[in-house]
Image 1 (cartoon, helix red, strand yellow):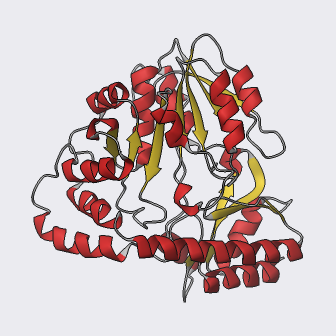
Image 2 (cartoon, helix red, strand yellow):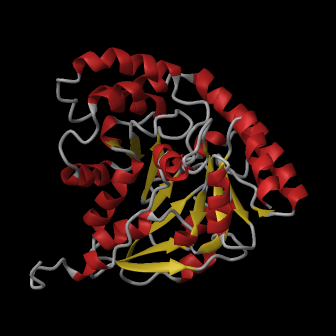
Length: 365
């Protein structure tokens, strides 16, 4: 290609998101047989909400129709549940779709955004998409350092990204820490509170109520997803909650019909599947305790998690562990892209899957 035809400089800087390998590819590469356990992408091991499945199957006959461009019924159901106006919600093709909309709306070469080391990699990508200045703040003992993030604020800072729980570490910043943080940052900075795993947290008084800051009129957008506890990762559905002006600006930037018809129907039905949510939490809580005990006995460093995954450091190249587990039919996620060369992020599976994981780790180590 003619070298005179090149992408803009900020595009060259973007390091694309690298998802885990699909099951089919691992099977093909390693000639595996039998059950393959995928513990790489924090999917719900119980599968999709049965109510959502039923709704999607009925809606397949309407696939020839365009979806509702404004997600009318889904957004109104969410608004009713949350006690807000529909104008305060935007639906996305996964909550991740909303991230570049935010940076395109509020960043640019003259503005900066702050992220913590070890946060969801898409924050950096979204900042680069808007050609904004990225400020990355180091962790402190595997914890997000809110004091350091506050000190990193510059006059041109427009956005701060907080994933809580934090992916891939599974840690949170507590209610008191977030309260203090909001008291001390300027009002003209937008805080993106990404809570993809919040539904796995119940009866935890230390977990912040981000909705409180929205009601107080703070400059905040809260992101939620249907991918995790509802088991709709393949349907790609999420939403953001914010002030009407913020939502209006984001709506101007999204593509038309960004959420497909089947996903909208699935989300509406999933919101009523309280039993699936309850089972998902129970399986996750039981799996956590089993894996904590097993990792401790095996001498691995791990971080207690608030999500449906556990950060585990093996003190050796994580590719070695990951590839060995793949040969045993278990797919996990290395964290080299996040700056943790010896760690894996391992999804909490069903009781049987967790047992198979520990059996495989004992065998290879």
